Image 1 (cartoon, rainbow, N blue to C red):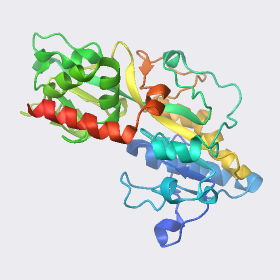
Image 2 (image 1 turned 120 degrees about the vertical axis):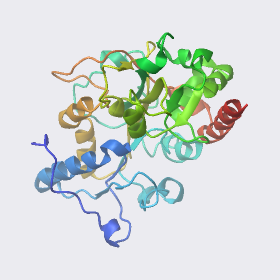
Image 3 (image 1 turned 60 degrees about the vertical axis):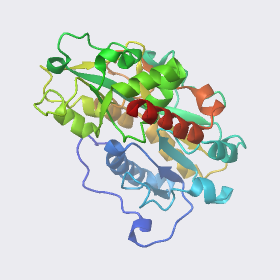
Image 4 (image 1 turned 45 degrees about the vertical axis):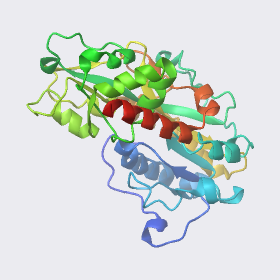
Length: 341
C-alpha cells in the first residue's frame, strides 16, 4: 500500500452532503493534526479491501470541534443498535466518562477484540500500565507532551528535568501551555494533580503566563517575541517542528512524557467488515506514519527508532476511579484561583 505521499483521493461522507446518519461499522476520531491523514489513508485502505471484504460504512469528522459531527453525542443518545461497530478515540474519551463507561463498557456491549497477531508493547511503555484490565479499550498510540526550553530566556536558571520542576517558583510567570485560562489540557491537569497533589498543581498554575496554541508556541520559542517565555509545554508533534533548535532545547521529562491516549473500542456484536478498521489502526502503515510525526505507536515494529525516554499516563485506576467531568471542573477552578491569587 503506497501511502508515503499525500493522497489526492479524499473520502466524501454522505452526512456532510446533506445525508442522514447511518449505522456505522467504524467511527473515527483522532487528534486534529493527524485526522485528515488518518481519513485519507483509511479511505485508500478500505477501497483496496472492499472487493474481498465488502463495503465498510464509516465516518470521521473533518473539523476539530463537535459542530460538524452528527455522531458527537451518539454515546448518550444512541441505542445499542445505533452504535458503531468500532470506534477510535483520542484523549479523554467519552467512554472514560462515567455515563459512557457505564452504558457501553461496563455492560460488555464493547469488549475485547482481536488485533493483528504478534504485537509486542514497546519498551518505553513497559511501566505505563496501558493494558486495560477489562480488555475493552485498547490504546494503539500516544500523543505525548514535552518541554521546549528557550535557553536565552532561561538565563542562569537550571532547565526543568521533570514534571514537578514546572512548579518551581524560579519559573514564576515564565511558562506557556496549550489551552485556555479556564480549560487546562487534561494531560497536564489530571497528571499534575494525581501524581503530585493540589499544592504542586497550584504552584504550577502560578508559573503559567500564556495559554497559546502549539503552533503559536513553536513560532515564539527562541524568537524575539516580547511575550515569549523560557519554557513551553506542548505535544511532541509540534515541538519537533521548532526551527530554532540552536537556541531552543527539547526536554523529555525524566519520569516519562505524559501522553493522551489514542484508543479503540469494538462492539462484541458487529459486522465482519469493521475488523478492517482494527487491522489498519494496529497495522504497520499507520504505526510507521505516527512514529514519524511524533505520535509514538504503542507496539514494536521493524526499524522503529527508540524514544528519548519513557512514556507515562494517568492510568486505568484514575480513569475509572474518578468522575472525570466533575474533577475537570474542580481542578480547573483550583488552577484558575491559584494563578489569579
